Structures are given as structure tokens and as C-alpha cells.
Length: 101
Image (cartoon, rainbow, N blue to C red; front, side, top):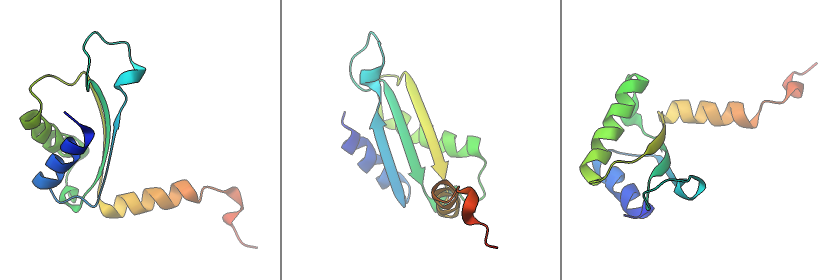
């Protein structure tokens, strides 16, 4: 299983504006080899009006179709496009000197 295959599979199931997938497996001492620790950020308007838990359930359901083995650890970030743009703005503009005199 490759990160690119996971990415393409997720894109085929829901409309995604942005997706980032990272393999954190090498940073963990785990008996099983392969993709055991993943970090995924998905931005999609498919998540509009959905609670965070429901967003995660959607992603878990899609990934369970793809993976035969269990993923040991999965970090999910699921945003709507509006939430993502707002988060990026806040992250990039957190300076205390934004106030004008």
C-alpha cells in the first residue's frame, strides 16, 4: 500500500479540495512493518454541517474498505474549505502587531 494509492482512493470516494497524507510509521517502534501510523488532513465541503465525529466516521469507513490490516494509529484533521481558509489565515497572521493605530 502506498500513500498515493490511499490518496487516490479517498479522492474517488468524496470530493476533496486538499489532501495531505504522511507516513509517521518510521518514527514509531512497532512490531508490524508497513503503514502503521498515518497522519491525514482532508479539506472537503462534503463535511459541511457535519460534526467532527461524523467526519471521522466517513473517513474511517472509506479507509476500512481499503485496508485489510489494522492501522495502529491514525491522526485525522477534517475541515470544510471555509474552516481551512480561516485556520490558515489565523495561523499565518497571529502577530500581535496587526492592530492599527
